[in-house]
Image (cartoon, rainbow, N blue to C red; front, top):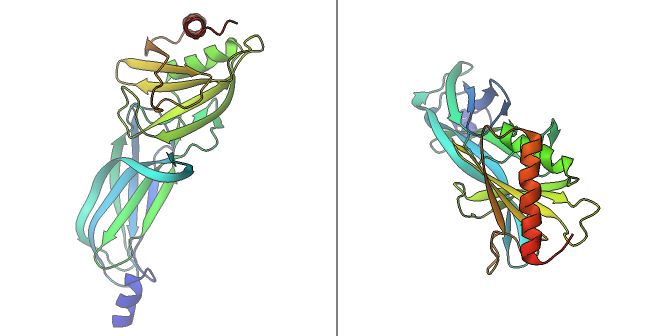
Amino acid sequence: MALRDLAARFGAGAATVDTVLEDDVARPGGPVRGRVVVTGGKVPQDVQEVVVALQARVEVESGDSEWREDVAFGSARVGAGFTTVPGERAELPFALTLPWQTPITAIGGWHLRGVAVGVATRLVIAGAVDPGDLDGLTVAPLPVQQAVVDALGSLGWRFKHADVEKGRVRGSDLPFYQELEFAPPAGVRKVNELEVTFLADAQGVDVVLEADRRGGLLTEGRDVVSRLRLSHGDTDRARVAATLDRAVHELGARRGWGW
């Protein structure tokens, strides 16, 4: 038994954990529900707590270096203070709410390369390697966010890339923010790209626009050049397109680009 106890401390024959999501597609501001299944290993083990957390893959820049790290941005304890029984299963239900500014991971059914959000589960056992589980989550856009993307497409802006960067912009609630990058229409010669950041809340969304990026939203000495406020009911593509087109042209006029 002592050898089994020692082996379990290093993960061999230890309890296992599996997270099962009711639905692996969610939207910002909406629920994520599921259950954590803990299966006892070869020996009883005392579980201090079981924690589920939302997690995002985030780009970090420092000097000339750049790397990615996983950042938790919401957690809940779903169980604590119990002993596993060899071979037996315990199911622990949970519910999390996605923050309004959770990064979007898919648009129009297409996964955004390089953007990853998931539910990470951790089983804390004293003196043992913590078994864990990670389940990917598809975060679909809110209707107003989809309307913005569709409207830009109707204006000739072509989606290029999306990323999630560590840091904050004015109005952000999380320690990171997402940028959607669009290439300009053929007639727009002096803009390399348009970057869009959504800062959503319960009433609507701020749409932050930056064009011809050279340093980024957080670079010293650069301002957020345009910011629109839309409600969750602003889903008419033609109206949203007109609003965006006017904002981008005003942005160009202030910068003296011409079109």
